[in-house]
Image (cartoon, rainbow, N blue to C red):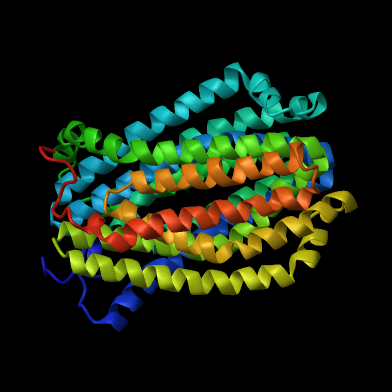
Length: 465
């Protein structure tokens, strides 16, 4: 194979050192990843727009359920982070067999996490929702959707590992296309089943859950077909024999990232509980606002995905200086993009709020939330991408520390103090978000500038692996 060409005919694993060429390489990988994240967010926004027409209690039920299942989803994404870091490093070192073993081990770990989440949703859904102070009427509406959404995570788990494997190979266009197909399936089925069009039963929130399961099933099928096509000439049996040796690495790299996501999700659930004191309108506003503003997160997530792959491949090829340059350029581009999009959302917050809810009280709460989250965008862009750099180097502990400091030293304590001691309006609870993201940027930025993350090079992160 020509050493200048990556797997499956993609871009070179280690590109020239020219700064402009590196910027183009980063951008060519980042923009399809951005579009993938945008497409995923479109699905959530469509859900919000549809469910928002069913009443405040239904929106709150959707918000509580998605917040709970988000915990499982973020744990699965943690396994994907480990998959990208380890597979990219193996590919950078020209060890495709090790990379395939990492992917298969990641699928097994992810399915175990998803199965545990589904078991809890089946056995104790009401108890979980009541812990968040959900109102009784809201709980009864939420339970069927909660279970369906948790079941969809079994499908999403395997699909996301295949997606992570493609990103480790610097292929972000395949996931972009599959995300568009999944969005189309989910949107069409949601419209039909939520409102019962063309003679179908009106299932309301349950219809959205069924549509989610069906869409993830389609996505998994497409990823399996793509994986079979790309591995048609590979020795799959040799990859299977490498699973056990790779599982330990996957788990060790993913565990701090799982801890990070767990810390964040528990903080968000606690934040949700604090918001409950302001009523279901505040919960509904938060559920809608996060989905709307998540569009402005896409550049940070896209550049984080690109940075993680470029850093992993560069360190796998024992090129620490290139890894540092790729990281710095990715962060700079992410901050610029997210400043622009944050400004755009700031000016459009009023029309967007009125466009996605017919409830005047919910819209009134939504506008200041969007203002605060828009202000936080530069900090988010920086820490998203810095986290991607560090994870690509195998350092999943620093983002964990950043999440702990940001959420538990700033967001939750500030929101609790504003509510319980100072009696401030809801806008102050929203403002606590800014402190969270600023602190995470500072923690990750300090470690990045020290440069020690680039010291470990080669195909593996752990001795003896």
